[in-house]
Image 1 (tube, rainbow, N blue to C red):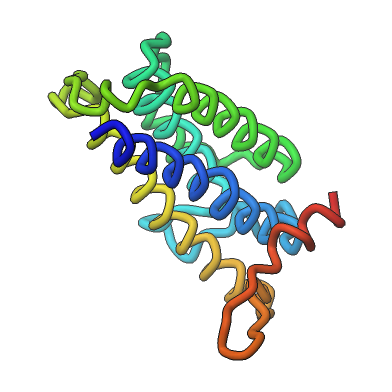
Image 2 (cartoon, rainbow, N blue to C red; image 1 turned 180 degrees about the horizontal axis):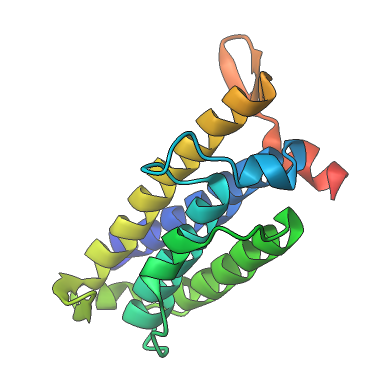
Length: 178
């Protein structure tokens, strides 16, 4: 269990920090503050709202739920926000949140994955809480990518293909632009 558990934690950290975050960063580089807060209708969320929501969710489930930090989340406020927050500030918030998530996961012993926690009123295992955050982050990252493509009419060029092998470009290109 320990090797498998450690690999699960490691891959979860990878997806959050080295896959989803740089892709979201590339989107934010291409969008104006106005585009980040655009919504197709009142039943839909803006990219800005999704970023607030991702930060709140990851902090509540991992930093608080798994790591034991105080949970001060106001979920409704994540969706109610209508005043623009600058993209740099949103990106910084997400980076700080994921740094805290990563630190929490780095300190986690794989044997704790089967321990139970109460998060958002539900009794879940630590493994389930981590999986929830990674899956949730993946889904909303996909929405952010799609909205960015729609708003910019551009290919985000996350991969180059070399002999049918996908080579990720987001790490090198995002690092150059920051």
